Image 1 (cartoon, one colour):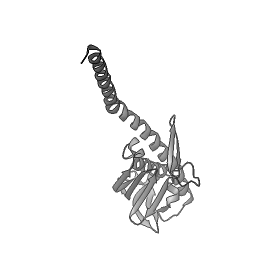
Image 2 (cartoon, rainbow, N blue to C red):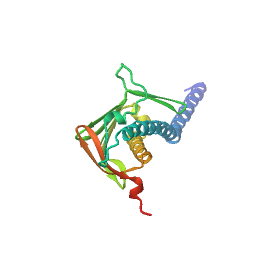
Image 3 (cartoon, helix red, strand yellow):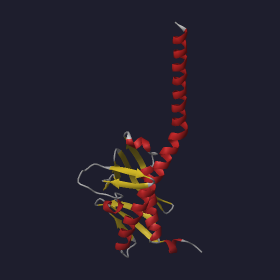
Image 4 (cartoon, rainbow, N blue to C red):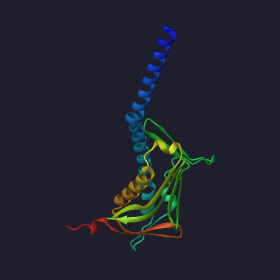
Length: 193
């Protein structure tokens, strides 16, 4: 091997090591920050939209029997519906657009679909807060851009915020005819002074 070949081999190996070190640094140091930032933006958009749509449902359902009905359409967090049938999202400068997300309430629980992410969970109430039990999550390649609980956190935050804004505290939940029925009490009557 000539001297020039040794120098070129050394430069090549040095560049390879430098690129590998940069890639590892990006993966271990920068990638979690990127996924955290994207997850926060998507979770906040889901929570805000669900809070608004579920809030409308709570305001319209003025039953005096201590039960409120929430349909799947009241949990819809899509900001755009179109005829393409493709579900997805666009995040630009913390401005999130979610299109064609799908929420379904069935006897076996709450089912949420966004892009290649799926969430399945059974609704429940813990300490006066709406939660999901027995949660299973599936995601494809684009789902790897987000933290695993982004859909769950966004939905539960939005529902709990809507209940708090309506001064309602959930006591129990049931699924009847593919709708959530929340047994609620006034938040003012549930606090002891």
